Amino acid sequence: MRTAEKQRLREQIKMISKESPLISGSGALFVKSLLRLDLWKDSSTILLYSPIEWEADPRELIKAAPECSFLFPRVAGDHLEIHRIGPRSRWTTGPYGISEPDPGSWHPASLSEIDLAVVPGLAFDPNGGRLGRGKGFYDRLLGHPEFRGVKAGLAWDWQIVAEVPSDINDISMDLVVTPGTIHQSGSTLDKLGERG
Image (cartoon, rainbow, N blue to C red; front, side, top):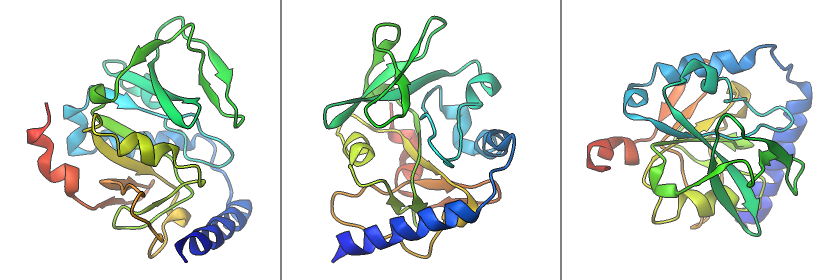
């Protein structure tokens, strides 16, 4: 059963994470990789996330690309709401202990605005498979008909596995970015000219 396989992989990755050193200033490694992507020049509205534990940190993109508009998710029941960061935006702690937008100080945004979604995960595979934490928040968000952007997983090299077990509701990434490698699976990347 896929659920048991996923849980085993989650436990394996969590064990590996305890043995893997965190690199000071690691966000810069990912920023360089993302800014080198051909699709970056076509991306003006970027969905980021607030990292937890040892997740790769994409927030340095805000300083590196001030010309872009940045969005962050907020847990609302069983789904994620999207908000645009502004000069007076404040953070709050969400139900899972993750920093998220305080809705009173952020501007709401829609999924159709997102050009590039930078997505966290516990594990990824070279074909874009993604293993999340098991709640399905990002699968529902990225699988929504309004979302038409490019999906980029952000991961450490040790988070890349041969194959992530998947079910019908699991959404694959178009590419997975590590500090040293970019794994491209295609799909949305092949149709960039059709978005709009």
